[in-house]
Image 1 (cartoon, rainbow over the protein chains, first blue to last red):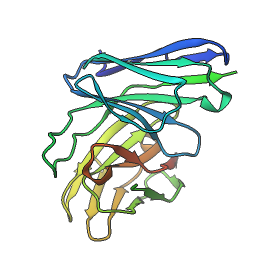
Image 2: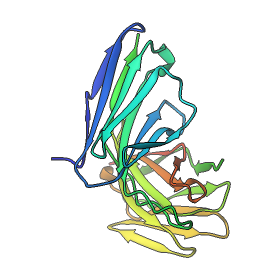
Image 3: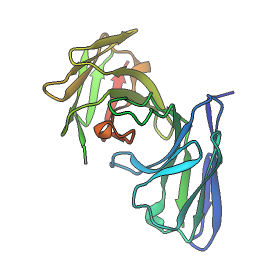
Image 4: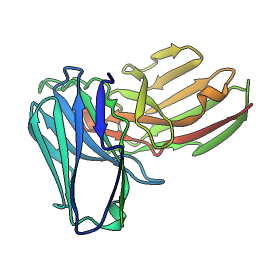
Length: 119
Length: 111
Protein backbone atom coordinates (compact mmCIF):
# COMPACT_ATOMS: atom_id res chain seq x y z
CA UNK A 1 0.00 0.00 0.00
CA UNK A 2 1.57 3.25 -1.15
CA UNK A 3 1.60 6.33 1.08
CA UNK A 4 -0.42 8.58 -1.24
CA UNK A 5 -2.88 7.05 -3.69
CA UNK A 6 -4.55 8.87 -6.55
CA UNK A 7 -7.44 7.69 -8.69
CA UNK A 8 -8.06 7.56 -11.53
CA UNK A 9 -4.59 7.47 -13.07
CA UNK A 10 -5.96 8.55 -16.45
CA UNK A 11 -9.08 10.51 -17.26
CA UNK A 12 -10.48 11.75 -20.56
CA UNK A 13 -13.44 14.09 -20.42
CA UNK A 14 -15.40 16.44 -22.59
CA UNK A 15 -15.76 20.09 -21.75
CA UNK A 16 -19.32 19.61 -20.50
CA UNK A 17 -18.58 16.62 -18.26
CA UNK A 18 -18.34 16.57 -14.48
CA UNK A 19 -15.73 14.31 -12.95
CA UNK A 20 -13.70 14.04 -9.77
CA UNK A 21 -10.14 13.16 -8.86
CA UNK A 22 -9.53 11.39 -5.59
CA UNK A 23 -6.50 11.35 -3.32
CA UNK A 24 -5.96 9.33 -0.16
CA UNK A 25 -2.97 9.41 2.17
CA UNK A 26 -2.03 6.75 4.72
CA UNK A 27 0.87 8.60 6.33
CA UNK A 28 -0.90 10.37 9.18
CA UNK A 29 -0.12 13.77 7.68
CA UNK A 30 -2.21 16.83 8.47
CA UNK A 31 -1.80 18.79 5.21
CA UNK A 32 -2.79 17.89 1.67
CA UNK A 33 -2.10 19.66 -1.60
CA UNK A 34 -3.20 19.73 -5.23
CA UNK A 35 -0.65 20.63 -7.88
CA UNK A 36 -0.99 20.99 -11.63
CA UNK A 37 1.90 19.99 -13.89
CA UNK A 38 1.81 21.15 -17.50
CA UNK A 39 4.47 20.62 -20.12
CA UNK A 40 7.49 22.90 -19.76
CA UNK A 41 6.02 24.77 -16.79
CA UNK A 42 6.89 24.52 -13.10
CA UNK A 43 4.54 22.67 -10.82
CA UNK A 44 1.69 25.00 -9.98
CA UNK A 45 0.29 24.93 -6.48
CA UNK A 46 -3.53 24.93 -6.63
CA UNK A 47 -4.90 24.26 -3.17
CA UNK A 48 -3.63 23.55 0.32
CA UNK A 49 -5.64 22.00 3.14
CA UNK A 50 -4.49 21.89 6.74
CA UNK A 51 -6.57 19.75 9.10
CA UNK A 52 -9.42 19.82 6.57
CA UNK A 53 -9.38 23.62 6.35
CA UNK A 54 -8.47 25.25 3.08
CA UNK A 55 -5.54 27.54 3.72
CA UNK A 56 -4.56 28.34 0.17
CA UNK A 57 -6.39 28.87 -3.08
CA UNK A 58 -3.82 29.97 -5.59
CA UNK A 59 -6.18 31.92 -7.87
CA UNK A 60 -7.59 28.73 -9.32
CA UNK A 61 -10.61 29.04 -11.65
CA UNK A 62 -13.92 28.04 -10.09
CA UNK A 63 -14.31 25.14 -12.53
CA UNK A 64 -11.92 23.36 -10.13
CA UNK A 65 -13.58 22.69 -6.80
CA UNK A 66 -11.63 20.99 -4.00
CA UNK A 67 -13.11 19.03 -1.13
CA UNK A 68 -11.36 17.72 1.96
CA UNK A 69 -13.77 15.70 4.14
CA UNK A 70 -11.00 14.61 6.53
CA UNK A 71 -7.24 14.86 6.81
CA UNK A 72 -6.76 11.61 4.85
CA UNK A 73 -8.89 12.32 1.79
CA UNK A 74 -8.82 15.05 -0.81
CA UNK A 75 -10.95 15.46 -3.90
CA UNK A 76 -10.79 17.72 -6.91
CA UNK A 77 -14.15 18.15 -8.59
CA UNK A 78 -13.99 19.12 -12.24
CA UNK A 79 -16.70 20.73 -14.35
CA UNK A 80 -16.85 22.59 -17.65
CA UNK A 81 -13.11 22.33 -18.12
CA UNK A 82 -11.16 23.74 -21.04
CA UNK A 83 -8.63 21.93 -23.25
CA UNK A 84 -5.82 23.96 -21.64
CA UNK A 85 -6.69 22.28 -18.33
CA UNK A 86 -5.23 19.06 -19.70
CA UNK A 87 -2.30 18.23 -17.45
CA UNK A 88 -0.96 15.89 -14.80
CA UNK A 89 -2.65 16.62 -11.48
CA UNK A 90 -0.59 15.66 -8.48
CA UNK A 91 -1.73 15.23 -4.93
CA UNK A 92 0.71 15.49 -2.04
CA UNK A 93 0.68 15.41 1.74
CA UNK A 94 2.99 16.56 4.52
CA UNK A 95 3.18 17.54 8.13
CA UNK A 96 2.01 21.11 8.41
CA UNK A 97 4.25 23.34 10.49
CA UNK A 98 3.09 25.24 13.50
CA UNK A 99 2.06 28.82 13.08
CA UNK A 100 5.09 30.03 15.02
CA UNK A 101 7.36 31.53 12.43
CA UNK A 102 10.58 30.10 11.18
CA UNK A 103 9.48 26.49 10.94
CA UNK A 104 9.76 24.69 7.69
CA UNK A 105 7.16 22.19 6.61
CA UNK A 106 8.29 18.62 6.19
CA UNK A 107 8.88 17.19 2.76
CA UNK A 108 5.98 16.50 0.45
CA UNK A 109 4.95 12.96 -0.35
CA UNK A 110 3.36 12.72 -3.79
CA UNK A 111 0.89 10.38 -5.38
CA UNK A 112 1.46 8.95 -8.85
CA UNK A 113 -0.72 11.62 -10.42
CA UNK A 114 -3.88 11.71 -12.52
CA UNK A 115 -3.35 12.42 -16.20
CA UNK A 116 -6.28 14.51 -17.37
CA UNK A 117 -7.16 15.08 -21.02
CA UNK A 118 -9.95 17.51 -21.87
CA UNK A 119 -11.36 17.15 -25.36
CA UNK B 1 6.69 35.49 -4.98
CA UNK B 2 9.73 33.29 -4.92
CA UNK B 3 11.01 31.59 -8.06
CA UNK B 4 13.40 28.72 -8.56
CA UNK B 5 15.52 28.46 -11.68
CA UNK B 6 17.20 25.21 -12.60
CA UNK B 7 20.10 24.62 -14.95
CA UNK B 8 20.63 22.93 -17.22
CA UNK B 9 17.13 22.24 -18.52
CA UNK B 10 18.25 18.95 -19.97
CA UNK B 11 21.32 16.81 -19.80
CA UNK B 12 22.54 13.74 -21.67
CA UNK B 13 25.56 11.94 -20.23
CA UNK B 14 27.37 8.69 -20.83
CA UNK B 15 27.04 6.07 -18.14
CA UNK B 16 29.76 6.44 -15.55
CA UNK B 17 30.12 10.20 -15.95
CA UNK B 18 29.60 12.72 -13.16
CA UNK B 19 27.11 15.55 -13.47
CA UNK B 20 25.80 18.56 -11.57
CA UNK B 21 22.39 20.23 -11.56
CA UNK B 22 21.92 23.68 -10.11
CA UNK B 23 18.96 25.40 -8.50
CA UNK B 24 18.96 29.14 -7.84
CA UNK B 25 16.34 30.94 -5.80
CA UNK B 26 15.16 34.52 -6.27
CA UNK B 27 14.72 34.88 -2.51
CA UNK B 28 16.09 33.56 0.76
CA UNK B 29 15.72 29.82 1.03
CA UNK B 30 13.80 28.34 3.94
CA UNK B 31 14.58 24.74 3.23
CA UNK B 32 15.47 23.31 -0.15
CA UNK B 33 14.15 19.96 -1.34
CA UNK B 34 15.27 17.75 -4.18
CA UNK B 35 12.89 15.38 -5.92
CA UNK B 36 13.11 12.95 -8.81
CA UNK B 37 10.26 12.30 -11.21
CA UNK B 38 9.87 9.64 -13.86
CA UNK B 39 7.88 10.84 -16.85
CA UNK B 40 4.16 11.06 -16.11
CA UNK B 41 4.54 9.89 -12.52
CA UNK B 42 4.69 11.40 -9.09
CA UNK B 43 7.72 12.97 -7.44
CA UNK B 44 9.99 10.96 -5.20
CA UNK B 45 11.68 12.80 -2.35
CA UNK B 46 15.48 12.60 -2.43
CA UNK B 47 16.72 14.91 0.32
CA UNK B 48 16.15 18.14 2.19
CA UNK B 49 18.67 20.84 3.06
CA UNK B 50 17.96 23.47 5.66
CA UNK B 51 21.16 25.12 6.77
CA UNK B 52 23.70 27.06 4.82
CA UNK B 53 26.68 24.91 3.95
CA UNK B 54 24.72 21.74 4.61
CA UNK B 55 25.59 18.75 2.47
CA UNK B 56 23.76 15.45 2.28
CA UNK B 57 24.39 12.26 0.37
CA UNK B 58 22.28 9.30 -0.59
CA UNK B 59 23.99 6.53 -2.50
CA UNK B 60 25.72 8.34 -5.38
CA UNK B 61 23.75 11.58 -5.12
CA UNK B 62 25.06 14.54 -3.12
CA UNK B 63 23.28 17.83 -2.56
CA UNK B 64 24.68 21.05 -1.13
CA UNK B 65 23.10 24.29 -0.01
CA UNK B 66 24.82 27.65 -0.38
CA UNK B 67 22.52 29.91 1.59
CA UNK B 68 24.39 33.11 0.78
CA UNK B 69 24.12 32.46 -2.92
CA UNK B 70 20.55 31.23 -2.50
CA UNK B 71 21.61 28.22 -4.48
CA UNK B 72 21.72 24.47 -4.24
CA UNK B 73 23.51 21.90 -6.35
CA UNK B 74 22.83 18.22 -6.93
CA UNK B 75 25.78 16.10 -7.93
CA UNK B 76 25.60 12.55 -9.26
CA UNK B 77 28.75 10.50 -9.25
CA UNK B 78 29.31 7.69 -11.76
CA UNK B 79 25.85 8.04 -13.32
CA UNK B 80 23.79 4.98 -14.18
CA UNK B 81 20.74 4.50 -16.43
CA UNK B 82 18.65 4.23 -13.25
CA UNK B 83 19.46 7.87 -12.53
CA UNK B 84 17.54 8.98 -15.62
CA UNK B 85 14.47 11.12 -15.00
CA UNK B 86 13.49 14.67 -14.16
CA UNK B 87 15.10 16.29 -11.15
CA UNK B 88 13.22 19.09 -9.46
CA UNK B 89 14.20 21.40 -6.68
CA UNK B 90 11.52 22.70 -4.38
CA UNK B 91 11.38 25.27 -1.60
CA UNK B 92 9.07 26.51 1.09
CA UNK B 93 8.12 29.92 -0.34
CA UNK B 94 9.31 32.43 2.20
CA UNK B 95 8.68 30.01 5.02
CA UNK B 96 4.94 30.06 4.31
CA UNK B 97 4.48 26.27 3.77
CA UNK B 98 3.60 26.93 0.16
CA UNK B 99 5.94 24.71 -1.76
CA UNK B 100 7.21 25.99 -5.09
CA UNK B 101 9.27 24.10 -7.64
CA UNK B 102 11.77 24.74 -10.39
CA UNK B 103 11.04 23.78 -14.00
CA UNK B 104 13.11 20.64 -13.66
CA UNK B 105 16.20 19.15 -15.29
CA UNK B 106 15.63 16.22 -17.61
CA UNK B 107 18.49 13.73 -17.32
CA UNK B 108 19.21 10.95 -19.77
CA UNK B 109 22.01 8.48 -19.14
CA UNK B 110 23.31 6.54 -22.12
CA UNK B 111 24.38 2.95 -21.47
